[in-house]
Length: 107
Image (cartoon, one colour):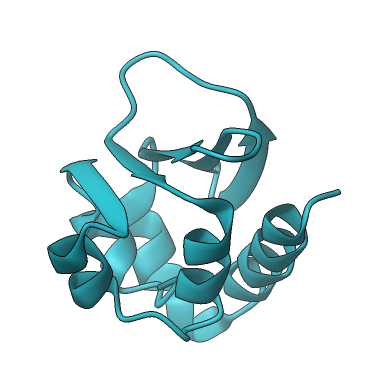
């Protein structure tokens, strides 16, 4: 399992078990974020049936796609990289709408 997978698995588990995030989870249902990892394996964050999960690979028509190097994703999800700064500097490229996920404080 890659470092990114480990970080995300723990982060999603925490979000799924946090009652303070229940409303935010509800707003995300049916949404997906495709993580296009330029130097690693692509991943997808899926919000379905009241939970967030992680899948390997790619999907058709994600709600949002984020492109970047694995370490930038790790830093983002560890809250060591500012999301807006990462996008503005080109470290991460965002397409689509991540707004539904913002309340979950994943990044």
